[in-house]
Amino acid sequence: MRATGIPGPYSEAFDNPEAPFLYLYSPSGDGSTAELFTRRRFLSLGRKAATVLHRYGLQPGDRFVNGFGANSPVDLAFRLGAILTGTVPVTVNWQADSPERAAYKVEISKARLLVQEHTFPSGLLRGIEELFPALPVYPVENLDRETPYNGSWPEEPAPEQEKLVIFTSGTTGAPKGVSLTYGNYASNAATFRSFLAPLGLRPLQLVMPNPLHHANSSALSDWCMREPGAVIHMLPGYGTAYWRVPAETASSGGELLAPAVARHIDFLHNLAEEGAL
Image (cartoon, rainbow, N blue to C red):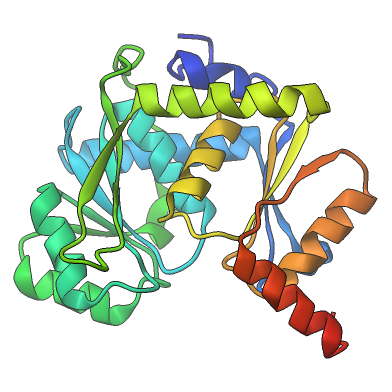
């Protein structure tokens, strides 16, 4: 445990408090409107999230649902708050889940709290509230007004300790909850370092348009919380703006990692053909 009070694997990344950690872009992707979260500011949000989790009585091992409808630094802040308190976030697929499916995830995970941003689809919120009227709901827009938690933190997490619950898509039945451990994420980090370090990707700039309820954005963002100098360029979601952000980021210097899937390339091809880039 270092001076920051963050458990071991995450402490080094926050040693330089004034360094940038995350840029949040508007849906247009215009770099001039990106909001900066320094490491100090993001760590403060994570501590405030820990305050909320403590206030609602969550203990190490307890789960809570991250109710967002777009990528948000606050989603990551509650993931950091979970690291600081030993609690476990549960993801909801805001793009595809029905109200019944969202409520099912609350039920099967035995979640004790829903943290909810205004972007969280209202139908999903109603579906959860109808079936679980006693489940506390915390509006994350209040987070800035909280006091950062400065109490005692749990010990450094063991590799087998649960860190995050992500659900399968459920295309062949009910979604299956996948319990991911700190050991799983340590393996992710070691893998990223092993194949990116020879390319000289330090410091790293990560462009992140893929939703945080997916495994890849969860793994990459967690890795950035471990890497000194790594910076996240976050978009609320994928769209035309995705292609503006890597171009502007690359032109400013530094090494760039921009994950893409096949449909992103198809979309880029269509934009190019239509002259819409």
